Amino acid sequence: MPNLFLSLLILHCIVPTFAESADALLFSIVFIRHGARSGRSKKVSIENVTWAEGNDALTPSGTRQLYLLGRMMRDYYITQRRLLPPHYNGSLMHVQSSHSARTLMSGQSFLLGLYPKEATKLTEDQAKDRRHWTPPNNYGLDEEDVRELKDSSLIHDIPLVPVMDYARVFERMLSFNFCDLFYHYRKMYYTTKDFAELYREYNVTFQQACYLAKLNCTYLQGKDVWDHVDALVAAEFDGKLPQISHLAEELDQFYTKAEIGEMSYNRTFQSSIAMNQFSELVPEYLENATRSATPLKMLVLSAHESTLLSFLAAMNVSFELYKTVPYASNFIIELLKTDRGEYKVNVTLNSKQLFVKPLAEFTKWVKELGKVEGKWQDICKLPTAQLKTLESTSALIPTVAGILATLIVIEVLLWLRKRKRRTESPLLSQITV
Image (cartoon, rainbow, N blue to C red; front, side, top):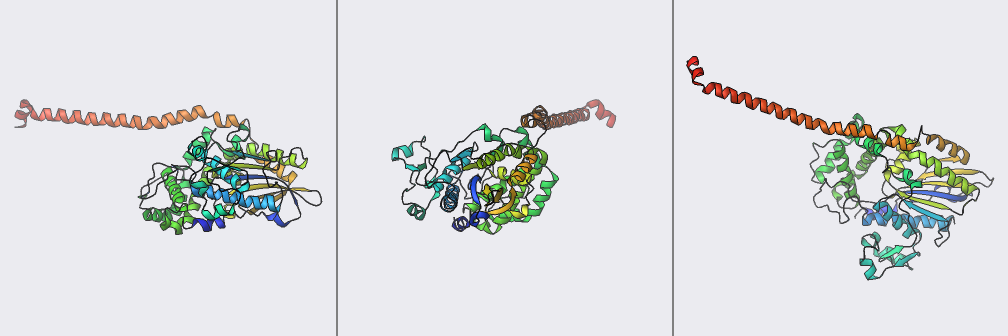
């Protein structure tokens, strides 16, 4: 991994804008994107690139990323701002993940950096037992990292801080697995003129990367292009394709813009899905913190790039402010109290401040963004019958075409056979003579 160590040193220096201010930090909501993963599609095979973890799974590099991010968060939230105590307290912190192995593992790795002393060492027999889960390669840590943690070697260690993997109260905010229409829109985007134009913009870079990776990408179209970009980005980050490292930034931007395109293909629909539950839960957590209605100080949510991008799209955050949302990105919402007793909300993405708003203004704005006509269940499920009809029709088209082609071939064969018979007829031969 030739470029990994440097990238991790500068990765998301988690020191928000208000770190040196006199404003008191009362509450923090931290959305994190999972760490580096293997390529998603099994159809994309790159020479000399293999994934021991399987496809679409967190890699040792990814576990290392989240561990280091957790360690930086520990320095900021525990050492500097003292929002959290040095040892884990379940009443002060809640950790939630989407229902995905890579986000669950990312959450565990993050917590191991945030609370390294809250780990337990498994015996060798337990470590071999699949019921005692541990990420591959000792969380991707090197010897220096292990030496730095004097109280825990991390070899076969697991954090005791729980990560909740499925709660309907967070379901719509963390992923969109419940919504068939969302995935239909994602697929449809790759057939649009917008994606064709985006592909033209990055075609030279993409083809160069394919050539250097010994992939034939000349005739790829639509979703197949995105699958190959995904595979190239994942392999390059993990140090498996150093020959395309000079193209990595542009490939990552291509990937991110395609994801944004998916988000904005039907922007009204996407905003309603992304922000509806966000607008219900986030203001409630912040309001409770102002009244000390709960001892909770931090909510950590382990999710996906699409989660963060959907918030950014709904909030009209300019692409120029962030360019990409790389692995282990963090989207943070902090509640601050000024020395005059005023409450305000500071929102950052990977340490870049996006905006600061008074709490009342932020709450009103977010609730406006989250407004939907009707119930979200109806938004997702009402067109299902139409969707199935559409899919059935699209599946029927090639079937009908095949039948017609077969009929045409039969007609041609019958005509040729009839013609041959006429040529071979004795009577016809006499007339011809």
